View 1 (cartoon, one colour):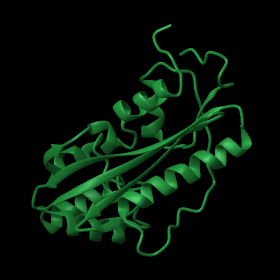
View 2 (spheres, one colour):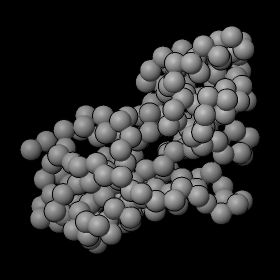
View 3 (cartoon, one colour):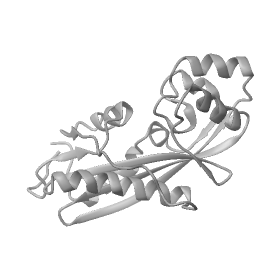
Length: 196
């Protein structure tokens, strides 16, 4: 990566292991930092608006600490029939989310915001996923694996959770938490060059 003197460094405003892994795959030097923001949005906010708002909030919080950096913020929610599902708080909530998704199609939306000196852009990537109809026993066994922890929709598609899905329509990196084609476009627009 070449910053062309535009930014001091690249910072990921997230400590999500899957987001770190995806960004590492680009071969860019970066640092990951906890944004430390409140992840609450006003009642009635659409899922698309919520992920955009939260991604921007995370990016701007970290930019406030490192004002010469280029900062990436991201947030993800599942949308089922217009209702947002975030990260379940415990195993019981995880099972309830999975029960509501079982045998049905839902959307997963990831908002990405890239901010730095003289640059600001936010966008949202959407994927559609369909789960197999899952038995109560199968749900219990999957929840016991703990993959639901920290994941909107209570599943991790890069793990054993990929066996939950009969169809995935969209960018798989979006489902994993950081849509790389979208992010790469924003980084190029911000002036980054690759393959040095």
